[in-house]
Image 1 (tube, helix red, strand yellow):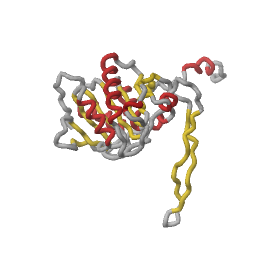
Image 2 (tube, helix red, strand yellow):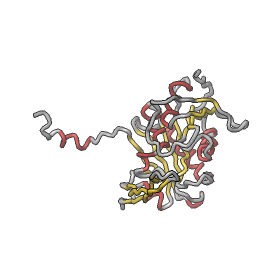
Image 3 (tube, rainbow, N blue to C red):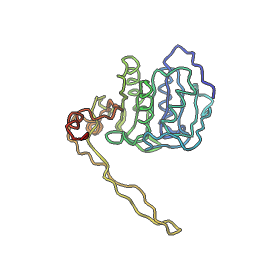
Image 4 (cartoon, rainbow, N blue to C red):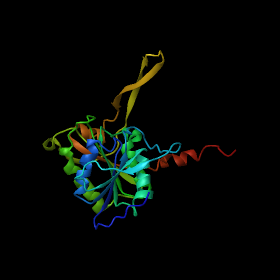
Length: 265
């Protein structure tokens, strides 16, 4: 694949997602990014939700130019792999220089709290961050394919422009979630911490027509955090939540305690 030469005197914006290249959330995001800079889209050819940071290592990987609409001004590529694969291919095979920012989303569904661990949307942003590229993942708390993204577009633009102007610290990406509200109902933007919450899971056991048992993941989301500085609190109270996420998973505060263990005797 020949690397695409970018010549415009505008910010170069890499756009991706996990819901697939035809997802309405991605199309809404592209509309906003076209107002800001020179847009290149590399997105999965099919839904890749909840893929976490998976990459393709045991099968072939395809990435081809695609035209969704003749009116589109951005360049688009459809990738057979995961969101993380999309970023890797964009950086190493498609672009002739690193993008100024990578924007992932807008996801159909929340990626607040512990959901960030499973999120394909955020894995793309994290992959960009690993490459030293400023990155933001955007998600709307509405799983519907017919979700209305118009209310959140001004916030997407504001946050992206601020990130381009002010920069994002190295080793950090932004996890942005929008409440499912109309534009005049959103109260503003809050910088938050990730709430301490988790999924309490169960499996629905079923039997297929051939008599073989199978399982369907179910469960409920439980927020154990009563703090008013969390993403869950912000979303519940009508605010856009912005959480700075780091991908150094070292628990630095435990190193001193672990050094007291008798490990070398």
